[in-house]
Length: 405
Image 1 (cartoon, rainbow, N blue to C red):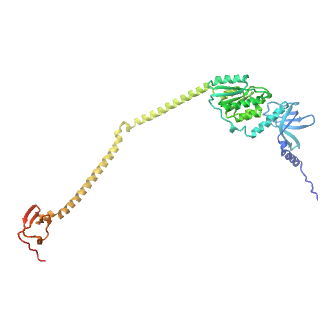
Image 2: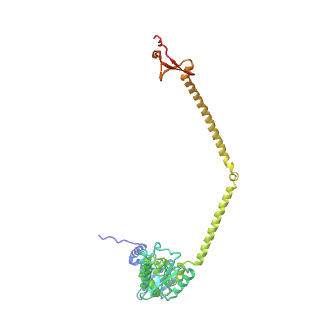
């Protein structure tokens, strides 16, 4: 059974068609060439116009945030190359071109090549800020890649000599426009890197038409600048000119003269800066010395330094008290020791043989032997009697009589 057809509102239909168009990759970023008609610069800042050729036309709009970047104001009858996307204006159900960039159609092919290369290199990360190298502050050698006969070279040399005579300019003259120019520029950048012939490079030329500057939009130049280990300042044309070389370089200068000023410092300003630093250093030293002198004077005027003996008084008092404690303790200890010694002496005196002898006893010896019993005596034995106050030599006359048990 066939399915009943779905009924849509006009708004739903327009939204559906809009989604179809916006999901088509071919319509999200495309280039269209044609002639402008019905151009209207709306008070809101948006531009409304028709883009047409001999066979057809399409409505177009370029919003203020996009057209503010254009260096020209479109006019009716002007042929242009427009980059943008296709979508539907829901309210009117009208499909139209939403322009995001625009160039006069006389430059269409080159502009398309420029945009495509720019987009591809950006996707590779060659424009990323984190890739940018720092320009050295005091370069000893400044490499210059430009025409050997152009006014740009004379301007660069004059500015380098005036601003920083200590920097040595190193020129590698190249062709800056026409067939083979891009290859010469790229080879010169590579040669500087190979020979380490400079601390910073200025790559550029004076102003000219898009065709004159085109060598600096070539991929070979972009990749040579991106691969340079030496920091590169791009200085192509005038301030309003922008090339692929500008995006890839580590620093963009609006003109070659400006590049020379960015490459080196102003020697006079540098000398003034150094002098200012010297003055600041001297002032800091003087302040530091003055602060230390004031601190020293404050210490010197303290009572402890004017009357240093006062500083020692508490120590003397502590020393005297300690000495008194030591003396008192020593005396107490000696008294205690003397008392103990006296007691020991009394005990020893009581146990001394001399004390026994003083009570009327005597010690009897026969030669070296002590005699303890009368039974050991034999008549005629020579004896020595030891009394408490001396000795006497005697001889046994008869045998002694022992006490009965």
